[in-house]
Amino acid sequence: MTLEATEQLATIETYATQQLAADKSGHGLDHINRVVTNAKMLLAEEPSADYVLTLAAAYLHDVIDDKLVDDVPAAEQHVVDLLKSVDMSQEKIETVMLIIKNMSFSKTLTEDQQKLPLEGQIVQDSDRLDAIGAIGITRAIYYGGHHSEKIYDPQIAPHKHMTKAEYRNLDNETIINHFYEKLLKLAEQMNTPVAQRIAKKRQQTMLDFLDAFKGEWNGMR
Ligand code: ADP
Ligand code: NI
Image 1 (cartoon, rainbow, N blue to C red):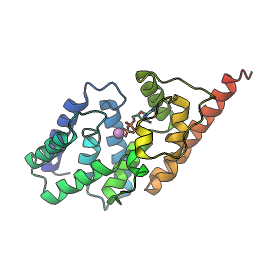
Image 2: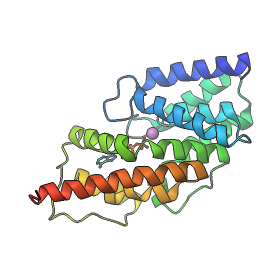
Image 3: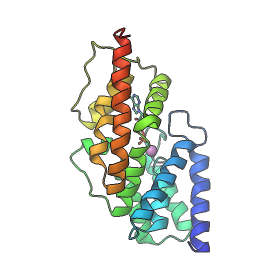
């Protein structure tokens, strides 16, 4: 990496740190740092991807989330201004914005899905790897507790097919249902071969957990 690239990423990291430091909903800095770590691992296998662009999108992928900011267009403009201030080209800025606006799971529930460039596929995989496996289980429980969800209710069937609006407005959500509504679907949505391989193992971790959970719920010895 050139010195210039190092400095660009340091400025971007500082911005993301400031924006997400106070978050208690599971999008904190620890999540961003794991996504960046995942992205670096995937970048090592995908040498044709633009390194700085990919890591910029990894750092910034949650700072325009409507769950975290009230004014999404203003948050987007701040990100554009930030990238301009580190002299990123107009074309690359547009690509970063396209990626961070279109990579979320809820976007995959809508009609207007964008095919992401390789850099976006890497960041999407990196984010999704952090939503599954042992970390994914922990984040789901953390999020569910924060939002006063029930742990589990066998009377409430999971909604396996939902529109984006339905997904965002679930009342009666339970932590266990979230696995069936989102987390177990992510492994087969991975873009890159390495992420597909890692996701297989993490999928099994979740399936084993759900199996044990339901056994214990039913008083199995
Ligand atoms: P991200 O795009 O970073 O994965 P999300 O906003 O979709 O972030 O969710 C943050 C974390 O909380 C993720 O690990 C996600 O699986 C979990 N989560 C989201 N919605 C729920 C829910 N209704 N119940 C339990 N966990 C949830
Ligand atoms: Ni994320």
